[in-house]
Length: 168
Image 1 (cartoon, one colour):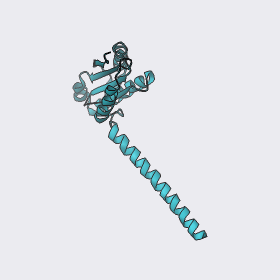
Image 2: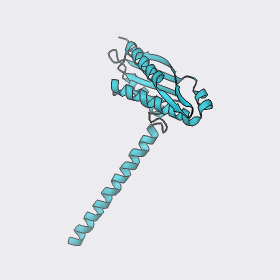
Image 3: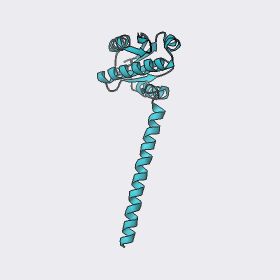
Image 4: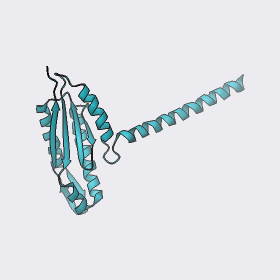
C-alpha cells in the first residue's frame, strides 16, 4: 500500500506541475493573440471583438464613444531617425495613453489598429466626455519627447470621434 500511495502521490504531483506549465503556456499564447507585440496595447482582432460587445450594450443611459488616433508625420520619424526611433515613438505613445485611460476608467482600452493608427473604446461615455478625453490624449502625445540619436523629438496626433447613443 505504501508503494502505491507514494506512486499515486508522485503522479498527482507531476500532473499538477504539468497542468500549471500548460496553463502558463495557454495564458502566454492568449496574451500574444490579443495584444500587439510592439506596443503592448490590444490588437485589431481584440478591437473587433470588444467593439461588437460594447456596441451591443449601447443603451440610452449607456452610450459608446470611439476615438481614433493617427500619429502625424510618422513616416518622417522612421525615415529621418530610423525604425528604432519609430518603434520607440509608438511604444511610448501607446503606453502613456493607455496609462491615462486606465486612470480615468478601467473599462477604457486602447488598440493598435494599423502601423501608427490606434483606436480607443470608451463605453458608457457621451460625446462631451469623449472630447475631453481626446484632448487629454492629444496633450499626452504633444508633451512627451521621443529620444533619438540626434536628440529629443516631439510629436502630434490627429484624432477622430464617433459615438453611438440609443434612441428612446
